[in-house]
Image (tube, rainbow, N blue to C red):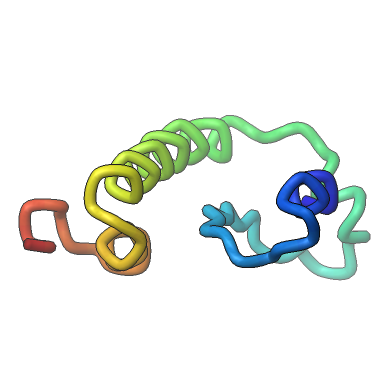
Length: 82
């Protein structure tokens, strides 16, 4: 992120799509949790997440930030967003 912000000459004002990974189970170290390989279920969820994220970027480009944010933050299908 620092490199991207540097490219924008220190400006933090740009849309971002963040993909969360949840919290480490139990007392697992966060670094180990983030860097470990995905299990089968996580890989399947990742495919869906990437498709959802790609659609959010498409909506951002064609419909603007607010419409994209609504899509990402709701369970509504795109047709219901107006």
